[in-house]
Image (cartoon, rainbow, N blue to C red):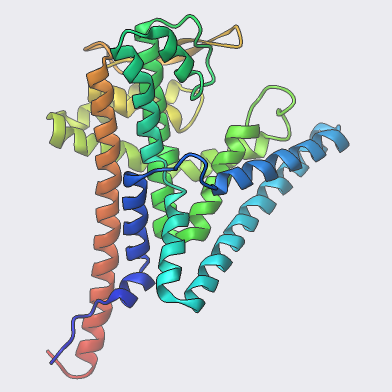
Length: 344
């Protein structure tokens, strides 16, 4: 009698089971309010390091070098700590290891949190409470929201969903599939560094230079993967032409100053038949972003729900690819071992 080649142990070694549990946890509960989160610790460490650097180092070169050091220490540190915790838990008990690994991976996924944020803005809009919608939106975006009208609020929500689909959903899964908890946490640290200090304005101009560049590099491949996934799924879900979506992205996305967010936003705009970009106020200063996509239809609440569906199915599609690849790889090893003993 020949046993099946897969067991809980096999799935654990392949990191499939923790990845599946983590995906389910993010879908089910996301990031519960008040529950300790790794990003909180990362944020404290970044703020602590930033304050020390800005207080003691005044030269541009010195701040750049110190910023590089802060990035390396944090990324290596969180990867090492995450890996040690997971391995220690596995040594104590396999199921404890699976549980801890699943929770840490789930903390890197932001699909549920992103959906909840979008819904939190949409609900008061549907009730006609535009002032409340502005107030809620201000919690999630950096632009000034006090005077935004309905179309601008909806555009801000859609831009937030489409941009964060890469760095909050697809990229964490991509790095979790490659390197488990250590790499997923390292990417989360890089993303947090970029969001906290990766700005061109003072006092972050020099200290945050490396953070911005590093996040661009780490998100480059996941962003292009997001474009491919959304284009394919838009064909299946909305009967869109993926080649036309790609042409629109090639036409518009390179005009965005970011090498990644423009592509992520543009593929959603092209798939949904809307236009993103335009004028935004940041602390009273006008910022003009390039227009992405064609205004075939206005941005509505229904369009945002379609974007959330695209984001969710993109994650599931990639998760399926990761599982299939791991299973096929394991099956190939099993087949080789089976043949080595003379079985045909």
